[in-house]
Image: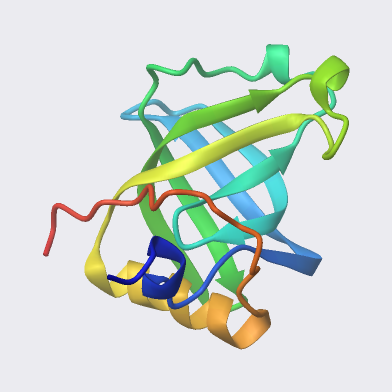
Length: 136
């Protein structure tokens, strides 16, 4: 039987140049423009100096637009997966991990293609898969 690591095609990618992330509550007009340099097929991490001031809770479903290239922006719904406070940020920077909870198959493929083209799978990433597509 193969391990979940063997079943993964791609893993987490740390990017040299950040990607634009726009986040909002479902149906709201207020949007937050942020950046990420840490993405995976399951979500992304936002460096956030004061994660306690992040305007969403663990129960919030967010609308998220992630700009992959000048001509490619994908849309998905996400939730906060984890908060890393400055006092607990020994191995990483403080911030918010966001997981993908709903994504169209074509946008999921665009994300996978981008990750494959821009990095390699991290061998020590034992994170469980987080994304689910209800559109397939």
